[in-house]
Image (tube, rainbow, N blue to C red; front, side, top):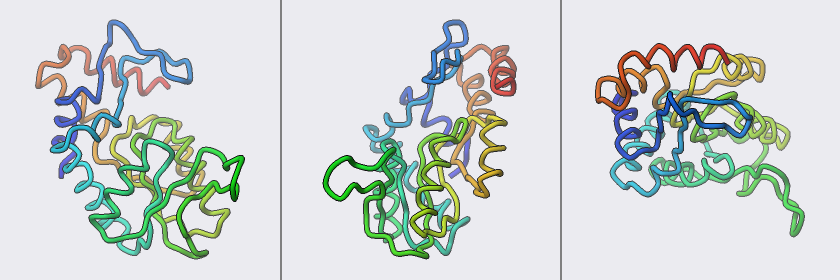
Length: 203
C-alpha cells in the first residue's frame, strides 16, 4: 500500500480538508490550511479496508515481534481493533486519563509486563498524545516497539519529540505526498503546494 494510494483515498472521502484561503483553527490555536479527520475512514468501508491492510502491513514489516496492539483514545481504538483482527493479535487502548470510577484503569485490556506493544494512532502532528500513550504503557511495564499511524504532517517538533522519547513512527501517508496528489487531482491550485509545505515547516 503506497503513500500515494492512501493520500488519494483520504482526499476522495473528504477526510483531509485543504482550505488555504480560509484556514482552520486547530485545538492548539494554530491557523492551518489543512485539517485531517481520519475518523471518516471508519464509515467508508473500501477506504477503511485499505487503511487496516496498510496498518497490518506496517506492523508486520517494521514490528514483526509485536505481541499486542494498543490504540490511542479515542481515534486509534477502532483502527487498533480492526488491525489486531487481521493480525490475530490481542489489543487494548489507553485512555487520556485514568477512570474516576471502577478500577480506575487508564490502560484497558489485559497486558502483562514485558509485552511487546505497537501503538496505533490515526494522526501524528506534534506527537504529544502518542508520546503520552507510549509513556503510560512503559510505566505499566510494556516494551513499546513503536507507533503505526495513518497520516503524519511531518512537523519538525513532532519528529524531535518522538526522537527524544526514544520511539519511532511509521505512517501510511504524509503531508508532502498528499499535497502533490491534491494538486494533480485538482483539489488545490498547484501554487498552493509550496505554501502548505512552508506552513508546515514553519511550525
